Image (cartoon, rainbow over all chains, first blue to last red; front, side, top):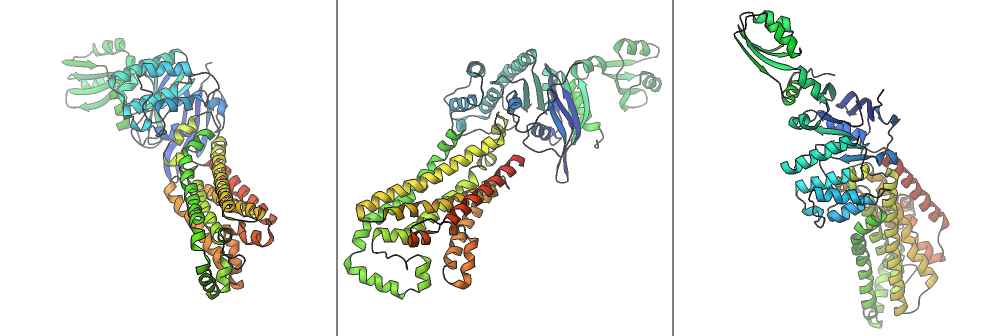
Length: 296
Length: 263
């Protein structure tokens, strides 16, 4: 059985009486990009900050390679690359000095990887950090998170501020990291990114994990339909569809049946008009944001 | 990490040390001309008019201010105590907290180092700079006094060391207090309050037996200049107390910092 690289067990974090996350459990595996999505204030950053020991969980455990990840476990820290959503670095340093400073914390030689990444992201090492634009600061943050060749990458809204060309460079880099067998926890609220790069996705809302989905499996199973038929009520019952809207003869539906079974079932009825649409992951996630119950 | 800490705190060290050295440089330059035989009598008369408690508060009952060394023993070391105390207070309240205030802690915490390592490097840097400030001022005064005339070298060295005890304790108190917040602006006021309140309590405590117990509330009691002037030795009990207090606040700092929420 495949062992998870990163496990979050029953994580709960309360800020006083305010809930950050509650009873959140996740298992993430090597070689996957796990999308962690949710609206603002859903608890994504709280979860990540608990993993990184920036804040203390109220209860719960973080395990890395089956071992509890303690705050001062420097060996485990050395295999983690972390990119916070807002990057704050030392303004008095130049990019070169910052990268040199970072290199100094790692036992292995990471200079070659640093050079590769700075060339790939076209980052000028002579600039002072205080003079960097938001996009360039993001590039520096990415290089700092990746340059020590971590096995686990925890990325909180990594593409905000990057131009579309650099976003593609970044997506390619993520795919390479996945191919190397590294785990990537990718937190974002940009839904279109998820379908582009993620293998699995976890949806968090009001501090609770409300859905875990495999991106590709979902694509093959869920179908959006608009059907006009005098037998619309029978059709809805037969194909076990979720109704989004309905009038006398027309209904907008969501059906989870495989396509061949769906078509065979529809063939038994009188159908005046049919429109079949594959919902994009964005649409699906958006529905979860709107629909799911507010409690865990 | 220590190297970077030393680099970023160098500027404030130079500024605060320069203030003290500049002050003493002015004293050494103007003292011979101000304190001549013409106005000596006038100053002596003025001193006689002051109450004994007031003279005691500034150690003027033990030493005359006729020479630069005499001035140093009375008012001069008060400046060293106050300015090194303010510098230590500000340094203590900022050195650890700056990373949280500037939000760079999120980066620093992700590196393969322990929180104790982070705190240790910063504390060591603070203690190095406080000691260096006391040393620089001491060396400068030694040179200044050597050029001004005769003085008791042993007593001077002991006097120069005493501000170190109060300053290190102020540094550790402010460091400990800084672990209760995330913003440096909240702690700077408190640290300056500790220094000034401590100084005034110390002065008031010298003014009579009824208020003598106030000295136990002042951190400046640890820098017992009066005892050094009188006995030419350090009060070992106060040295040990300074060490114990510093250790107590440092332990508290490490314990609090290791459990602190950093963002």
